[in-house]
Image (tube, rainbow, N blue to C red; front, side, top):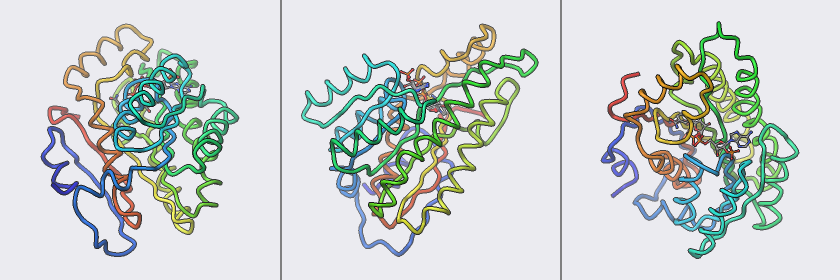
Length: 279
Ligand SMILES: NC(=O)c1ccc[n+]([C@@H]2O[C@H](COP(=O)([O-])OP(=O)(O)OC[C@H]3O[C@@H](n4cnc5c(N)ncnc54)[C@H](OP(=O)(O)O)[C@@H]3O)[C@@H](O)[C@H]2O)c1
């Protein structure tokens, strides 16, 4: 089955996929998927749970070398051990994305170990929803530091290598919240809107270097994300809204779809939701 047909047949909606072609592709068919993933060196932030972990598993199974960054070292180390135990190539590097030097060390480790960085997935994030009037200033600061600055540090760490390679792919993680704001989500939604804007600016700027850019906006996906809500009543609301959440592999397949296109095809935006999600 062709990748597009495979996506359409899955149990969730892809509502918006923007693709630009630099020239017509003569390739087609599902074999492209693992062919353009196999052998690639992929750095993933926030790889200790949820979307990052699921993506590491899927890409490793398809032959990519994965470099895992997160603060919970035990989690990324045991994931790396598991993937290498199954014959894959994986490396775990302790990383707090709020520190540029640590994100640079993560990407440098990928290049030192595997010789290059093909894909940078800026995925680390948190979602401590609360109404603005509660003045949760520490939550605001953490959200901005991880969701915006962390992504920018990932771009900063990978871009010099990708320019030199004249090839690469930067994948940023936004959200449906980046497209629609709701009460209690203003700061989170603003950070995810920033991810959309920065990704589009990046897309335009890196054209001369043959670098692809993708921003993925998931709806409710079952991960540990709701645990980052610090206000008990809001956390309860979020948990209810996540009753319809779909598995994290839905995101991993979106990453694989974008990566597996022929190199001249740049999948710029993917927005998907659970089929049952209203907002
Ligand atoms: N799940 C959804 O419904 C959904 C929907 C839209 C968008 N997203 C986005 O998807 C991304 C991944 O979230 P998830 O759903 O997979 O949630 P998750 O299971 O809570 O995973 C979040 C990841 O981010 C990492 N992280 C948080 N702060 C970090 C820091 N300072 N430095 C490094 N890593 C950090 C965590 O690792 P450590 O704690 O080990 O550092 C963890 O691996 C986020 O950007 C989120 O906004 C998720």
